[in-house]
Amino acid sequence: MKLQQLLSYVRRCVDDYHMIDAGDKLAVGLSGGKDSLALLTALKSMQRFYPRPYELAAITVSLGFDGFETSNLEKFCDKLEVPLYVVKTDIGAIVFDERKERNPCSLCSKMRKGALNSEANRIGANKVALGHNKDDVLETFFMSLFYEGRIHTFSPVSYLSRTNLYAIRPLIYVPEKDIISFAKHNSLPVTKNPCPVDGYTKREDIKGFVREQSSKYDYFTEKVFGAIARSDIWSRVGSDSLPH
Image 1 (cartoon, rainbow, N blue to C red):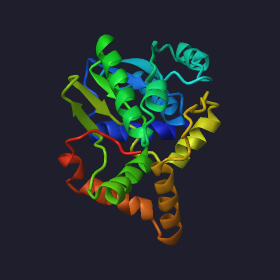
Image 2: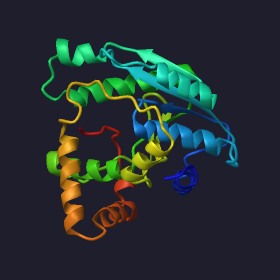
Image 3: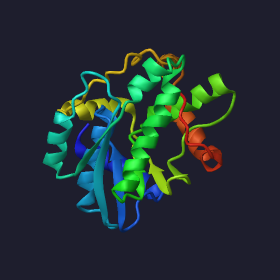
């Protein structure tokens, strides 16, 4: 996928859900994964022509795992002329060594988002841009249904009352396969996730489920996503927590 195609997805999503207002300062949560790198690339490119001017920054939360390097992210942000703020934490040690969590992803997600939002407040951002894609919407929907017994998925725009921030998700129209294509086509510096449970989570199980159903039923993902978009699920979402 080329940049113009990505921008088409992102621009339409931003406009549909009025994600950006003139004068906003957006803090992109830059994990080093393909999604957040693609999101930062798109928002930087769109900044040049979008009719509502906005500022842009990137925030990387280091969980303290060995082997996680930010040098490539720093070079990437320098090239885009976007300031990068690196927040160093001991979240990994707290979750795995001190707490020895049986479900580490839940606590890690909460602590990581807390660190991201605190830094966004510190640098004067009013919105946090997150890299969840179209597949993430479906996976979260089925995870909530199967593991929590509720109909839920994250909202395109969420108000975070504790920090007075808005979380926006401009990539929710973009299929994951297209982001993979974009990352390869543009040689994005994707950083491997050093988390010891990466690839062994509930979300990976649901990914497999969605793939299986997509092979059985024509337009499975499009139909489920369309049903979510047409329903009142997004308008009812009160919690911004994501299962893993």
